[in-house]
Image 1 (tube, rainbow, N blue to C red):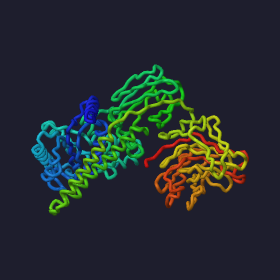
Image 2: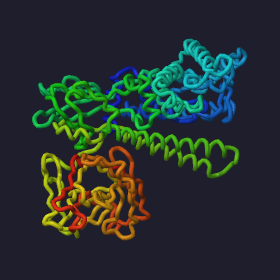
Image 3: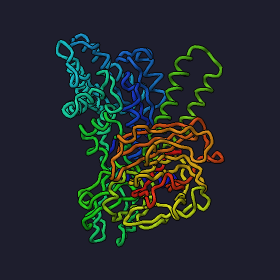
Image 4: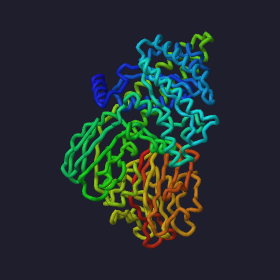
Length: 614
């Protein structure tokens, strides 16, 4: 059954277009230090795994720093091809050479002739070693003369362009594919420099070796040369008519209308996991056509009444949008979806797998080749087996699964909740919460819900208590908006027991009080951390947003207020009650008459959580 499913997934993926890689292909990436970075190659592998989850293709990363067409630190080219390419029986080989061959000087005809002669000989040997191999010649990636001044004597990148022109001519004679990793990166750098000249320099930090941001664009150029499809999935739903208006590379079923719009969606691919949190990557992608040409995962919903709507996938809230935004269409690749999370896990497995192979090759095979050690073959075999095991996990992790989508009308205030946070307070009642009957501050606090706001006060005067979530959480980030009355001491509890033994984010809003620090509520040996200058983060008589994150077996707590970090605190060991590694979230009304204003209230709204990996 699994083989049939894989075959069907492969067929579905190939239906998108004529991609050059075929079932059973074995790809070897060959080149110099830019290939040795294992970045554009790893991005390419991850793309193939996520876009074609049923496609049986193997990848080997064989770049060696300093290489030229005649070889380099890893040996002469004859040895490199026989040892680092041929044993893997490649059906596809990519070659990126030229950066070192030009010797970082203006154009020199003798150097050029040396490069062209050496390249032709390398192709001859490769075809002899791997009959029928399909070769992708890569036009050398650029020497950055966009964000920095050109090299004297006419610049160095024009030399690399001339090398690339030779490859274009040779490819026509030798039946090779050509991938241009120069011009698209140069164009991207020009756009990036115009937008942010300082940040653009981080894309190729040393002018030669791109960071991850530049490698992503290079991977895109290689994939486009191979005819990679641009669509992850495209869905358009007409909510007014209750029908699916369009769908591509996915299957939409069980569409329902009413109080909420819901459906099940079974995509045939996963998005490419672009790290938009990295500023240089975000700039590079914005300055290129990567998203439009290779990573289109879109959702459009028309026919909704004006207002605000939460998009939830598998019960987790992605974000809140206006009807107009939904009608214009969403780019799901830039949002915290379960599909993106799955794709990130695939990418992590890609990195691990390629790392294992690199250890096998560069730490065992090559350095120990002449030492005649009896255990070397067994060590390499064990690493090969580990590589295969990781590949199996990688392939399994890339299989898409159906997801349940829901679009629900929400109050405008909920648009403040950050993307990826799911509400745990519904704004209507205390569903999902309960009052502790064993808390030392009291057991009858006055918690009410009024117009979407959770208010807590003492009942009777002097008696407080805590309101706890029914669920427990371990690593979690909590978002809430708060507006307490002056003179009231409360707190946001993390990993709380039923009694209220917890790590507390202080909300001590009174004379000599402090906000946003950390306190161990009935926890022994927790050193209190106070934020002395909390007022500079605070807006009086207004709603203030608070984000509090707790993570780790030895808890680490980070707090942000109105988007600014106030607290980065770590415990010395786990002091939670009973050594617990999880607990409930709670909000507190402090007991006593001295630190709670008579008739005062603590107010919370938009309480939401984002669970973090354990």
